[in-house]
Image (tube, rainbow, N blue to C red; front, side, top):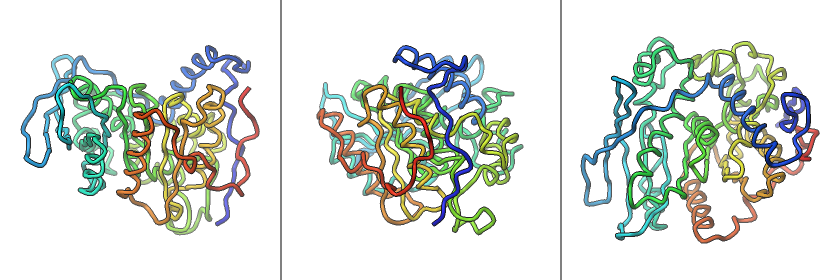
Length: 370
């Protein structure tokens, strides 16, 4: 399928003062500039951190399902939601990796995927992001969500709100004596994948960020589209106008100024990905998922890899493309489990995760790391 490049991707190594980054210390400062630019403009900024996050155990099942009630407090207000843990047999004194999934509103975390994690001695955790911010196309109804009752008047869009939920779960998880705080991975599918990428960019605690089939506003690319823009959705990739028209509450309000003008954006999604460095980014996609723009995802990944290369951790930015369409499969979760085991055992990730799935595609950027 034909691809259209509106403009080459902007160079992240050019600082706001026009000078080129030349050291890792300078990159850390530049990273702060990029973080503020992208999170504020694209997603409306992150909601504030709460005064406290607490959890109480509601119950345990014989199958290893532990259900907690998480309560987040800010001033005199609070909100609560459930966090479910699917645990293997816990040995006293031992710490376990956790995979945190926010798609409790869907059924992507299947019994097969949960059992796979247990077999790897990995805890699967899941919450329903929609209990924090409702997943609706009516903006007025969305603003009645618990998050906006906790923080009235904030400019954060739904995606930022969902991402905030991941951080609150991590606040609690790191309090559990059997959780390894250095081995927490976050994952999500589609719009949940968009939220995961934002969560990983905003919060440095997840060692792995794993967006799955996340498309526009996630791992995709604003400047590179596939298919004809006036064709049916199944025959082209999602673009900014699609998001703004159908879900006006998802993005930051400033993105309205760039509808049909994506080439003028001062960033693209490679900026978001490089905020994860030097931690791991594992993007999982499906080659047949045209709407999610897998070539665009690969293009921005290759651009973000320049920062990983600059920091000497090129093998920390990874991708996997399976056959098929828009789904979060047990095999996708298995790839994540394999990467956790690599980190746990201090072995290199699989070479196939470091390969360019679209080698015939020309680079969509014309700069390289200093």
